[in-house]
Image (cartoon, rainbow, N blue to C red; front, side, top):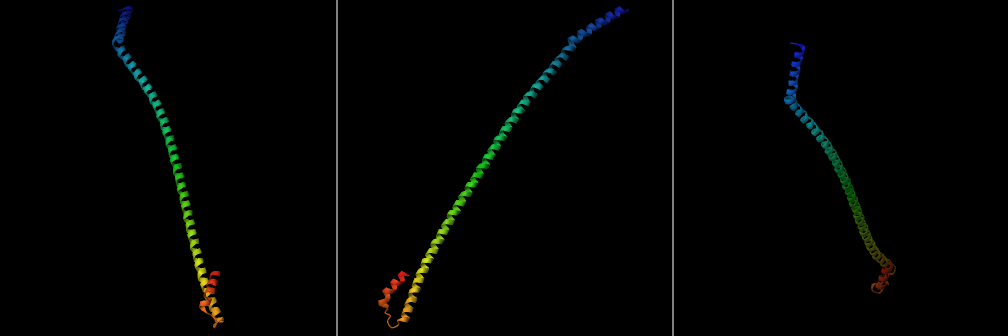
Amino acid sequence: MSINATLFVQLVVFAILVWFTMRFVWPPITKAIDERTQKIADGLSAAERARLELSNANRRVDEQLSAARDDAAKRLADAERLAQSMIEDAKARAAEEGAKIVAAARAEAQQEVVKAREVLRGQVAELAVRGAEQILRREVDSRVHADLLSRLQTEL
């Protein structure tokens, strides 16, 4: 065989190979490549959606954390105000109670002073009568001088 015939046969075999490849091999490969390209594109879009969702979720979490912190701070401030008002109320009640105790003690002391004055008046009157009796032993008439002694007692 000559080179031309060999070349011609090789060209026919090559054409058959190209036709066979284009007809039976190339479509499944192209289809697989297209499917793979589509899967990659879907995966990339899903990853982008997931990234956006993650970003949104992080933003919502940050907002909720901020709201929770604000709520906790507000509750803490309310608790502190309540505690402060309770302390102030307790101080006011203690001051009122102390004032009542002091007033009662003063009233009791005043009553004791009045009782002591009455006792002293009685003792002074008695001493005055005894003294006058000793000086005027013969002239003391208890009925006559009783009015004088009662007036003296009220004056003291």
